[in-house]
Amino acid sequence: MVVKCEKCLPIEGLEIPDFTSAEKSSLYSMKNQSSIHSTKFIIDNFNLNHQQAKYIVTHINHYGKCNSCTFDKLDEEYIKCPKCGALNFNWPTNEIGG
Ligand SMILES: [Zn+2]
Ligand SMILES: [Zn+2]
Image (tube, rainbow, N blue to C red; front, top):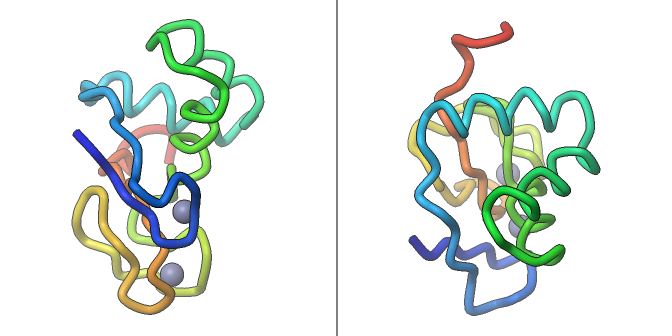
């Protein structure tokens, strides 16, 4: 699927893999430990380049909470924040590692 963030390049958006819920869970917990590590993991496992991997890691958020502002009522996946316009992946992973 293609995701777009009006705050980030490329402006045309990015085609991202169809992550399974297991992959979402591991990427989410990996990012909480190290953004660098999760970026490298995506490059190695999903055959993406550094820019694409970084784009993905940048937009993984804590469920419900916008990465770019204080808004905390995001309720859909791959949602644009109604307050600041930033994209959040908003994967429903709050049941793990919480
Ligand atoms: Zn963005
Ligand atoms: Zn926001």
